[in-house]
Length: 231
Picture 1 (cartoon, rainbow, N blue to C red):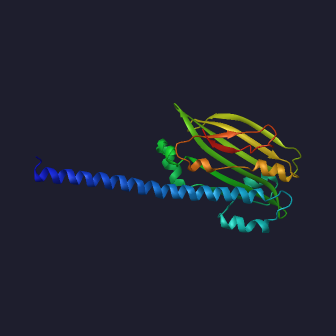
Picture 2: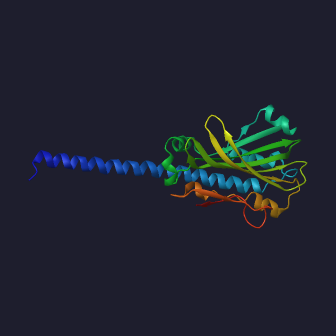
C-alpha cells in the first residue's frame, strides 16, 4: 500500500498535470480566437477591396476603410513610382501569432498558421490609381528552406489587359522558397474579372491539421484563382 506522503505526491502531480493541460488549452483558445478574428478582418478587407475601382473610387470614399483598419501613410518613395499624391498600407495578421508560428512550426497543425495579408492603395488627384491585395503563408519546410505562397492581385491605372503570372523566388536571410502567383487587372476590369481575381478564401489559416494549397485558372475565370484548400 502507498503511504500518505506517496498519495499526496501523486495527487499533486495529477493536479499539476491537469493545470498544465488546462492552461495550455486556454492559451491555445485565446490565440486561436485572435487568429480567427484576424482572418475575418482579412476576409472583410478582401470584400472591401473588391468593391473599389481604379479611376472610380475617391479618397473620401475610401477614408472609412482606411480609418477602420488604421492604415499607415506610405512615404514618397512608394507613391512616386505610381505618380500618386498619397498612398496607404493596411496589414492584417497578429504579430504574436506570426512570431510563435515562426518559432513553433507545429502550431500550424493547431489552427495557428504562419500568415499575413494586406492591401496598398494609391491616389492621384483624389482618385484611386493603384490597388493591390496580397497574401503570404507558409505551408511546409524542406530542410533549411521554407515553402509557401505569395499571392497578389493588383489593378493599375493605364493597364489594359488581364494578366496572370507565376513562379518562385529563393534566398533571403530566412531562406524562403515561395511560390508566387500574381494577377494584374486592367483599369476597366469587368465585374466578373474582379470577382475572380479577388476571390481569396482565407479559411485555411485557421484550419487544424491541413496544409493550404492554391488552385489557379489559366484565365482567372471559371473558378476562384486564389482559393486555399486543405491538402
